Structures are given as structure tokens and as C-alpha cells.
Image 1: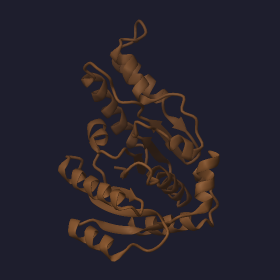
Image 2 (image 1 turned 120 degrees about the vertical axis):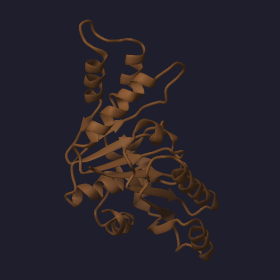
Image 3 (image 1 turned 135 degrees about the vertical axis):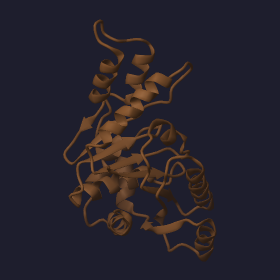
Length: 249
């Protein structure tokens, strides 16, 4: 079974950037191939990884829902073929993008096939990294794999921290089998205040570490350059690597 790592956090906290750092870390540590899954409806993990999205799992699901199946081909064979086509293969990792949420109508059959495909696909990788939206429903609905590590990313704002604590509670309420949850404070200009530690302790959420605010990471983002290409000596990347060394099995 692969080690499944799910990322979550309020918008703007840099969780997708941290996802890219995690994928870079796993590949650099020889823990590849990695399956990267972009489960955020506002998909942009591909930009962090320097890839252009040409297809999504959602496209395949829509085609099946609309009955776009070639003559002489069963729905099962068609959806398997289309889902395979949506996998973007790279050196050390592969990326699949979920795509937009479904619209009106019943998607039960298509979602069941999609779930089965992800389960089979995940079995080919020692590590799966899922960049998730703030709510955990998308993860719960589209995959039945247990989550070994849930990394909740927040910035230094109180709203970001409160959102992280809500995600932690929601993950416990949903049946996704989270083994261990951690909080990562990103874009930090100083060490967390004592009140932050008290909030985490009272909610049973462990602080994995702090990633400092970094000008080079900001410049990469503004220039549209893949964060995965950032220098190995970058302070933010080094801080992220130190965190991953402690918590990634």
C-alpha cells in the first residue's frame, strides 16, 4: 500500500507550493515514483510542477456521463482508456488532475469507476500526494484510500489558523481514516506566538514546523516559474525538507 499524504488549507496559505516542495523532497530522497493528485477545483499544482494540463479525470467522467463512447467499446473499457490518458508522466512523478466538480445529474456510476481507477493507479506508487481544497468532502467522495498523513498548511493569520483547526476537526468527522494530522505554518516572518501553541494544544493538533517567508519563492510565483525548480539551498525549501524529514514515513 502506498503512503498517502493529503494537503489542505485555506486559500492563499501556500499549500500548493508546499505540495510541490513535498514532491520535490520525495523524488530527491529516492522515494519515487510519486503520484501527485490535484483534487482542488481551482487546479494549479501543474504550474508549481511546470506542466500544462491537457486532460483531467473530470473530462473523462463528463464524457461517460454524456454517453460519448465509441461504437463497439464498453463503458468500462472506455473510461479506463480515458483515465489512463489523463495521467501526465514525468521524471520521478506523475500528475493527475481531478478537474471541475460535476454539474447537474447523477454521476454515481462515473464516480465509482473513477474511485476504482484511483485505487488501482495508487497501487503503482510508494507515495501519493494529494493537493486538496479547503473542505475535505472532495477527498472523501473521490477516493476510499486511507490518509496516512494530513498536512494542514496555514499562514500566520488567525483566520488561517482557525481554518486549519476546522479542517482538522472535519477530517476527524469524515470517514477518510486519517492516521496522523500535522500543521505547517507557512510564510512566517517569526516564530509562532505562545497563543498559537495553546490553540493547537487545546485542539490536539501537532505543529510540524515553520516555513519562513521567502523572496525567491515569491518571485518564482510572480514570474510563473515552477517552484519545483527552486534552488536546493533556498531557506524555505530547506525548512520544508527538515519538516518532511521528521514526519514523512
